[in-house]
Image: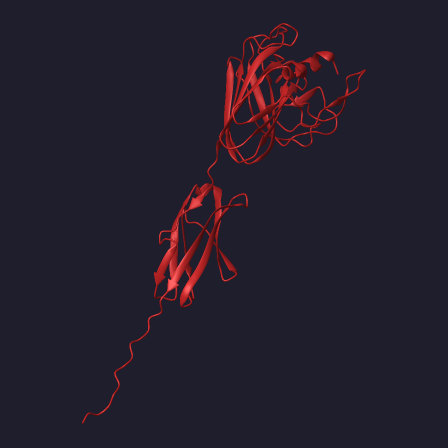
Length: 311
């Protein structure tokens, strides 16, 4: 590995992080090992500059230096290549499903750890991958628009490519809880060599509300009949799969008609009948559940008058 590439990671490690509720540390969750003579990577996979843990309503800030062409080197025959070691990699952990906003901007006067500062002409760009990669070696380049061959644990999700003039780029997406990797860098249109550039990274998260359902008839029902109709509406139905109705150890599945649902509970016993309804999401989890009590008062016929003859 060229020592210049190693400095790219060093610049990020000596920068500062500002945290609200999130946890941001200038560490690699699986530190890389390098040959002390050749600087070739031995193990550790992606060399992460930051580890960030977030969930719910959080904000994390970090800064560092990256190469001007680190995210995309136009001199390559294939433009889907970035420089692995002059980009900065972030290991992001979401503890809850979140609406995530990533803002990457050029930043002035980011220290380089040697008494100087980085440049202020960054054209920021970044890629988002699912999972972390912490085993095996790495390579000088990576695919910024797809899966990375040498980082087999990562799965490409999306990227934000600078149009060659933007000083900041931003992306908002909903992600389930889990591990994610960000590769941040520069996409300079210049053909002249440029020094390392300063960036500022802000990640914010908002809780993602899961789907829910209501019951028009309420959860405490009185009836004299042997059956009872239940119905209602589903909020965020695009994230919902079905409602599972359980009574007496037996479960049935209720599908939706647009954003409405209905089912009939049959063979009600006299007295109290308990029905459980659980809303299953598209990813197989249960987002909402309700307990319905149906009290059946069976109609009892009035006794007929006693017949007899009078005197």
